[in-house]
Image (cartoon, rainbow, N blue to C red; front, side, top):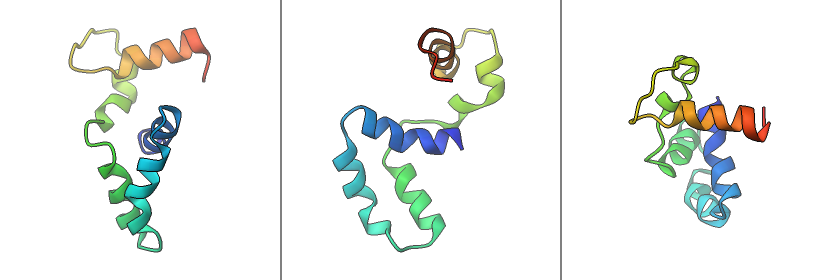
Length: 81
């Protein structure tokens, strides 16, 4: 759920709210699956693997995964959680 919720939050936070809304507008009134696909399609570079609890808890450095460093920074330095 964190991965899914973070997509629109990121778009809004970084100034792409209008683009996000325009991209999902055709899915309004459709099935939940179609709405989900429309939202996921707005962020093709994002990966659910970055939100895996095992990735976030791991102390192993993985240059191919930004999940742990970002969540560590957010939790410890910014206090969002």
